[in-house]
Amino acid sequence: MTGLGRQCCPYLLCNVVCPTTASWQALVEVWLLVRALAPWKETLSSSHMISTILNINVGVLGHVDSGKTSLAKALSTTASTACFDKNPQSKERGITIDLGFSSFQMGMPDHLLDKTSCNTLQFTLVDCPGHASLIRTIIGGSQIIDMFILVLDVTKGMQTQTAECLVIGEITCNKLIVVLNKTDMLPEDKKKTAIEKMAKKMKATLQNTVFKTAEVVAVSANPGGQETESPAPVGLNDLLECLRKSAFVPERDESAPFVFSVDHCFGIRGQGTVMTGTVLQGAVKINDQVEIPAIKETRKVKSMQMFRQPVDKASQGDRLGICVTQFDPKLLERGLVSVPNYVPTIYAAIIKLNKIRFYQASIKTKAKFHLSIGHETVLGKVTLFQGTHEFELCQEFEFLEEIEPNLKEDNVAQYALLEFEKPVTAVPNSLVIASKLDMDVHTSTCRLVFWGRLLKYYEDKAYASANLPQLKIFKNKSKSGVVERAPNSSSVIVKNMFKKETNLLLFTNMKVKLSTGEEGTIEGGFGQSGKVKVNIPGGLLESTLESIQAKKDASTSRKPVEVSLNFKKFVYDMGKNMVQK
View 1 (cartoon, helix red, strand yellow):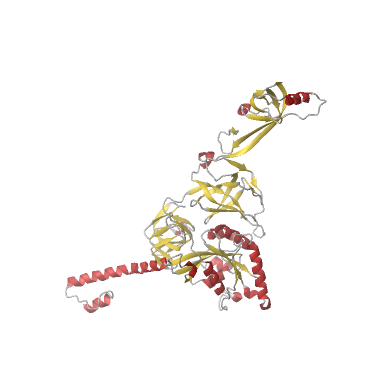
View 2: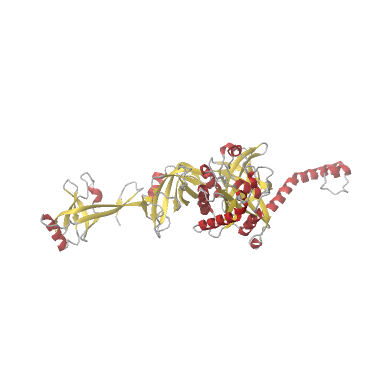
């Protein structure tokens, strides 16, 4: 029995002896308990290991065929299930068509040792597509990164999608490394000069962005461009050193409600459904209840992994796989997962509008744009307005017909009401990027129009009648006419201000001003032709009376006395009332 006990239960001491059946049964129970706890022991050890890692999410962006995926592959030591163009369509088309994730680690840089308790630095690479038609995917991927690498083909320089990626990067983060790839394609005798020239050109381009001090590194991620038996990559050590120096501790908030951006969802037989993505905010643990807001279903977290290492907890910024049971992966290709009842489904929203300076057309009210929120892109109509103060429902804002290119008014904030053609799930304060994706992808015109963050959103499908009347957006209106005659020194008859069919009761008691300076009040209609009688409380000036009288004399050339009426109409006022200050 002792030998059997040693063989079956290696956790027990070698000199255990079991003289009785009861003792043997107890021993077996202990052994079974230890065996049951063994996987948890491994998970907890892995969780402890993961907790000592500082993760930085790095976007890899650039024009199609600039070598982004080759660079990610050359840098990475750990790959996810969807990286390096494993998708069959990617292989068939020879380009990246979806987000790919991989990672590598290094020792913690000296400049971060006193800023974090972690001892290992991990870079998670987010390999984004470069083709113009896949801009939706690029925008979705860009919203989960802390910094990014802009990859250029050194033989071609800045291309259309390179510029768009630079704009997206400038909106989403403030750290950049420029990589001049494919240096092996340059003639050896001209290589150094060509690299220096391109680096200088890129640094000049970046002077008008937030990336003025960005480093430029030359590499050849895949010399010869062959899939197999390629020479070793060139320049990676310089890039790794640049990444090490650029590393920082991103802001992380575990106390916020948990939100998880899902980019892939698939089933594993016998395990359940795995949702892979990035934690946008908050933290999650095994056995937590999470909701898929788009379909209003809740599931319990069964298990979690970070790059194939089991963990029992993850927090903001972590790249994660969450396994749940009894959930059809076809219901969620990509989207959001969160704590229950936190992420709303919205039909309209208000943002503070930031115009992208490279978009050369005007932005017009009622125009439709492609609106990207996280991984979702939907068509939506915009209504523009502006004010000299921050957005609050109690404040009044001026309606805008359009915002012209390169026109910026000081101390005036511009806003947009976005009305979606179909509802979207969106986290409060989400980033929204507007674009014109129906433009010809072969042109060199920037398709990115404006961006902003959600300030207010509407969950009621009937928001137009239930909520928008609270939004005080006004149009300045004016009417003008001329004095026909003055019955006495304190009143005038005004013509040409209204049409015959106008309901003059709407304008009774409204203030008007004469071109000679006097102010008056509309008393009501005069006759049936649209004329009105205006009372002048302070009386008419002598010079005004003379002008009115002189106008009757055909021999004089004096200008008529004009009368102006100014008022405001609120766009969403159901009563269509007119208001004066």
